[in-house]
Length: 412
Image (tube, one colour):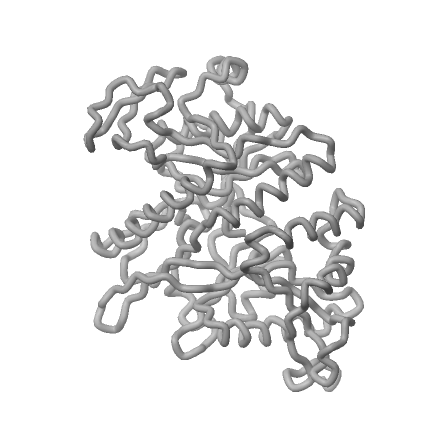
């Protein structure tokens, strides 16, 4: 149709920070739930001035090619630069693990009067060209408008299940007593500790990534099919894992704190839990590389952990005061016992703030007891999608052969 926008008529431009309020005022109707317009603008200003945004955020707009300076935007979106580990296999079967750059696409918004006319599709096609020129290996996004729109444009839909745990469902007397007594092996994580946890986690991710192809199988967690079952894919797959960073966690935490202030809630101080050997619960330690034993005070169950103060089992979360959920950003557990310890601590914090559920995206169910009171459900929004840009600049090339590991909330 002659009225449909064409690539020759439009372009995408970067919006300077001074114009961010223009796009925010437009998008308030979409993402301002629970806030006044002024509060929404304050939230967006706060987030835009954090280190993660300053270093990685670009806001884009679709404008007429003949008038690129206009502030009347047809569509807009944001991108955040992300580092990732990428494992590729060449035609000879040689494996290479390297760090690459991609972009998370967020806040895709089309002015209501311009919807259903092809402008958003055009913006995303033009944006993909820009991202490839900027050296992107991939782009990721989370769809709130179903499965089809972004799939048609080249993004592959990935597993979209979440584990929902009611805070008090199936809670035994020991758990309820522990909430009052604070007797937990899993020690609380405060914001100042997240940086060291993240660096250790990234070191482990790299080692696991390398080990997975050497051993000929996938040893990495959080790689689930739509029914929640664990996917044991062959090492010939191209694989990608988006790396968490301290600044991206800070962005998430400050967003939670903002809502706490708006709703008059005491600002959270605990943002996760970890199991380490300096918590006072070690029952035997040889001070070397042999495993040390710690005991769960609730069930008297003992578990072995490496003799190290670096947490290899931990959980990080944020507080969703709008939906009354404790949302797990990152989850690493060695076995079912450490999972129970970490989940118990998460439930305690959720209960203290009147939150009703603990939500975990795409968990590895092998480390969860069936009697933990879990419900696996398909997500209706925030459906994870990823596009791969190959060495020749092709869009969405061989998407079926690319595995996205650790597809958790921290990458949202």
